[in-house]
Amino acid sequence: MNGMYETPFIFSPKYRLLRHLLFWTVHVIIFSFLFRERRVSLELQLIVTTAWVLMIIIYSYPLMYWIIPRILLKEKYWQFAVIMLAWGVLGYFWNHVCRTYVSIPLQEALDFKNINRNKWAPGSFLTIATMTGFGSMIVLFKYWIRKQREFLVAEKERTQAELQLLKAQIHPHFLFNTLNNIYSYSLKNSAQTSKMILRLSSLLSYILYDCKSNEVMLDREIEAMKNYIDLEKERYANRLEISINVEGDTKGRYIAPLLLLPFLENAFKHGTSEQLDKPWLSMDISVKQNTMWCKIVNSKNESVKINENGIGISNVRTRLSYLYPNNHELKLVDEGNFFVVSLVVELKQAIVSGLAVSQSSTLVSEKEVV
Image (cartoon, rainbow, N blue to C red; front, top):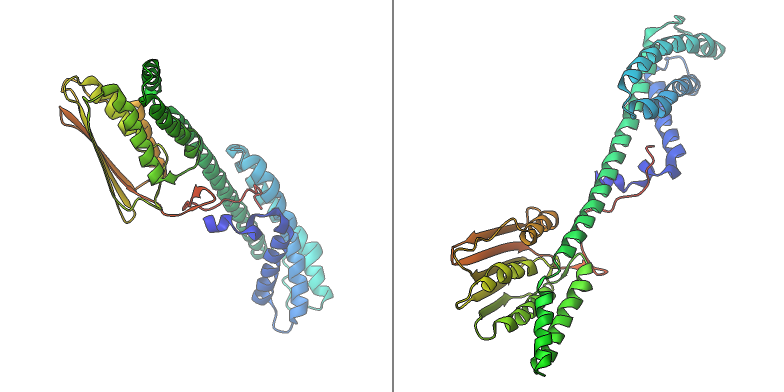
């Protein structure tokens, strides 16, 4: 269907007249060959068929471009049914008028031999009805395609808006704690103050600026996570045991921004911060070809139950379903005294103009039915 969207000749109003001329020209040629008399030249048959097609156009266009858009597509079904019944009766009389005043006189003038002089000939009425129905189906099909296109555009815009909202909700709550820590260190004139400000500045720059793109380099996401861990670590002094392991080729790989950071936020907020005795956290990231494995394990009190449907994790689930449908696997396991997050994602390798290459096709913007 995307290929149809990208065909200007079918949808652009620029080619409307040419489309209609081509459509009816093909039918004139087909009808001329089908109903041509043996002793009548093709040129004369084309004249008669063209006149007959003009009669079909006069009958069918009000139905296709007035009744269908204004009645049927407005969901006035009972009115449409009544009108169609009346339109069918009108078509039968229109067939009589066309044969009486156009078709038969024209054939006589051109010296046709085998002229069907039945002014109510049901065969010609069937031709009018069939061509009108065929044209109406084309109009309805194009209308359906246009509605599908509008739906996809609206869905894409809605998804983008939701993703932006989800990213906005991910801004770390730890900012207040970090600023308090920085303030405490500044009162002591500690050398850690400048380092913490630098890490916080880098993290905020990543969240506020880099994350505006649809995807960021995986290295930047990992760097942001390390800055996050370093800032949180200051709250625990030497009590927190941390293990960070990154394996594989992370360069040239791209991931949705702030996809991994909420898991760290959740680990500190509901795990290590609630544990008074020897808290620990491990983060393992491995990249092989286009697949990334991320495993975050944190200690916790057995009495603390992690809400797997909390805002942070719920947001990530939603974003994963939007951004990596059928290309990710997320597992959350509460083992009592520790919590495990395991995420597998198929990464992308290329980006164009700062945005990741998408598999979705560009949709044309014209909203004309025909």
